[in-house]
Length: 295
Image (cartoon, rainbow, N blue to C red; front, side, top):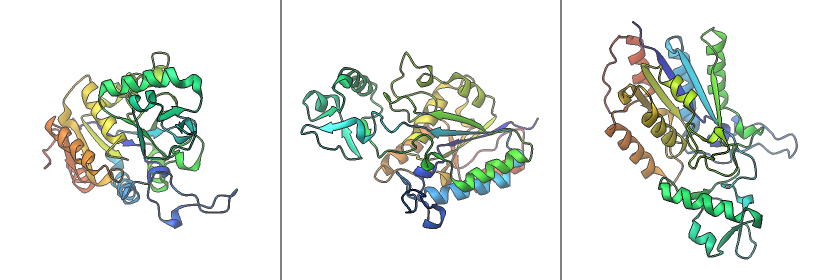
């Protein structure tokens, strides 16, 4: 029996791609070219390779899932939510802890938000996965930056037009009270918002794969968080069926060590790594028994 092969593409969005100028359209309002809000070095080349992979191996892909980081402008991880002790602007890439908020170093601009904010930070820090990072406003719902990289979008559209199926789209991050790196669940799930809790439908769909290929941006954050949650929650287990396409993902600048730790941690759990070329070769062989790949 032919193995069922799925491709999971995590956040292949304009705001995360270091797009060349010719790939960036003009803003009809301001007149300047639109620019990615949080470009990951190497992401554009990653996405071009990924699009080529989809075109080459698409006939063998049984399902494609694309996750989309989807935020409101006012969000606990965006600058507009916060102010400094003197009422000043909090710049992107500032980390904020519960202790700093209690000391008055940073506070929500809306004073009524303080209790909920502290409760969130306390729980986030207890979980120990991340410290709150204030990011540039990115992947704002409806904006150009929220859209999918043009080459990946075209490759996925061609796959659909060939009658392969419909590309599943999974949105994450529209709850402004919690960070949502992972497509499987938020960093601190909101009991009142099912969209922040374990996405059982997504996990069950991915669990049908005999071979699950993973690509996207950024390997230090959303790819890492999603893959970790997928591996930990697949009902059927067998992490060795998950393959990270390492030439189709890159880390946020300054977070290279987190990228390396992610790959090492996944390999330790049995997840495999491969280039897109190696993965295409693996698929082409179409063996009933998945062949081992070099880490």
